[in-house]
Length: 260
Ligand SMILES: Nc1ncnc2c1ncn2[C@@H]1O[C@H](COP(=O)(O)OP(=O)(O)OP(=O)(O)O)[C@@H](O)[C@H]1O
Ligand SMILES: [Mg+2]
Image (spheres, protein in one colour):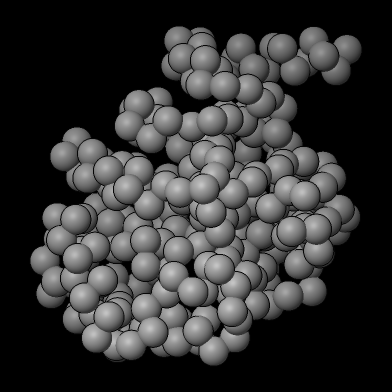
């Protein structure tokens, strides 16, 4: 049974249809790269899977381990092990990452005895130890976890803090929405190293990106191209190379031919 399965999904936002019959499957242990031009619906797919109230499912289904999650609230989906690192990380004045993450982990610990939850720290002492270890790996000062989330952080610092949350929450399926955007060359390598270090057979990753560079560090098993609300091409990493050389015109032509 697939871990996460998206079936013939149609989604609208404020009355505008954005996803138009999207099919997509990701399993634990796999790394998928999701690419596509600006506005093709990549972030919309990630938000819809997380249960953002703005995104209305008009048709189709989203299944987690065979069960529909359409009726679940965002926090219930998060407890199942779904995670999203935002394209534009939010600022939360007045809340530190230290407190926010510990609350999230405690809520997870209360609710379930799944193998994923068993890996989460059970005491604040263990939590703090792990958090400080991980922040060190990200080459950031621990000061960041005691400051209000995102407030006054640089773009790259925000992105690294999102990866820290993923590493701590140990999701089953993680969407990383352009984790490479705004990162300098060294930070990109650091983020990639952390993502690689959390790779394991219990974690599936969907990485949304525009560029090949991050995929040189984090090798995807599958690459998908989205165009106008649908996945129109799937394959291996060879797709990325062709895309870098020829741009999306190549995909547009081949999908237009297929439609004729
Ligand atoms: N609230 C909204 N109201 C109207 N249109 C919206 C809304 N939110 C998103 N859209 C539209 O949905 C389309 C898909 O947006 P989305 O953010 O999913 O694209 P994307 O593939 O992530 O693009 P990018 O690569 O630029 O991040 C865009 O045309 C966008 O303008
Ligand atoms: Mg986007």
